[in-house]
Structures are given as structure tokens and as C-alpha cells.
Image 1 (tube, helix red, strand yellow):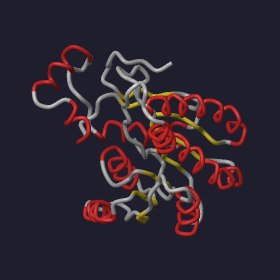
Image 2: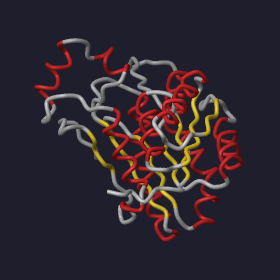
Image 3: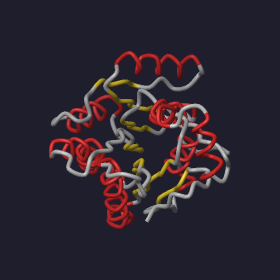
Length: 250
């Protein structure tokens, strides 16, 4: 199926590895000009090489610490200067932050800043771009909302879901869709460390209907669909990509 994305533009955060890397590759393969940003210059360079070697549209890469106080401003300004406008925003950057019940305030601030505040700030920097064009897709990666321990990232991701729902109500009249994609256990380096060897199979057999972890491409395909005109009547939703894992959004 043609996703009707050729000639569109996108900004993807956390683009150098894992889910972000797969999302950039998927969008580029559909003819999207992607502005890919992350902290690791070497990984971004290898991503660009992979895409061009595969015949995709070469992404523009931008090295920036997303958590820096001026991160959202610098990313938004650089993206608009480089590609003129943004059709698709993918809020992907983030990371798990499990912590003790008496964790210091600094840990909470860092976890919430990375996983919620900077996404909201970047989105707000780009809202005039979307409103002026009366179109666009904003997609945020959420997370497991039934954590086994206190996890600042999961609290922040719950905030992402509620914020996205409210935003979808306000932006729908302007032709802008706002959705979340909630991955289950996806085969990334972080997940491999948490579920090594036989632990992966044991967990998958017990908890996942499809009996295995997903691939980054599974999440990337969902994001690409929601970013496309094929999903123009879908907004304010959370799309689970979890193989039927018994972990539910609210």
C-alpha cells in the first residue's frame, strides 16, 4: 500500500538508535525528508549512510542534547531552517528511569524532563508551523503504564498520553492529528539487558500472545502509518504494538 508520504517532511527525536533509528529508516523509505536528531554524531552518520545505501531519502542529521535547557528551541529552529516546514513530528527520545521510593528530587526532575517536558516544549515550538499549514501529524511514543516499580519515565509517559489526548481535541479542527504509539517489549539493546537468554522466552511464553518480543520495525511501521494520509481520520488514540502482551493503557 502506498502510504502517500513521498515529499513530506518529518522531525524525529532520539533518532540514532533503537526505535528512533527504525522510524527514520521507515519514513525515509517512503520518500519522507527526515530531520533526525540525537546526541551521538557517529550513530547519526551511520544511519544516514544506511539509508542512502538502501536508496532512501538522505536524512538531515543534527547533533543535540535533547535534555539541554535550549534543546527544543535549537532543534525546532534548525529543523525549520533546514527543511522549511514540518509535516510530521515524532516525539521519540526517552529512557526508562526506575528508582527507589525515596529517590531524590533530582532524579525525578531528570526523568520527567527527558520523557515529558522536552517533548511538550518541542511540540509547542512547532505548533505555529502546523497551524499555519492547517495539517500535520504529531506522534509520541508512550510506554508501559503498569510498571512493576516506581519509574519516572512511566509517570512521564502517562502524562504524554493525557496531554496528547487533550491536544488532539484542540488541534483537530485545524486538520492536525495527535496520537501515541505504545510499544510492548521490543528487541532493543536495553530490553536485551533486562531479559537475557532464556528469560526472554519465559516472559514471552507467559505474557505475550504472539510468544516473542517485537522488532523496532514493528513500531516504526505503526508510526509511519499514523503519520500518513491513510490515517487522516485517526486522532487522540493510543496504538498498542505489543504482540498482545497483558499490559494495558488507560
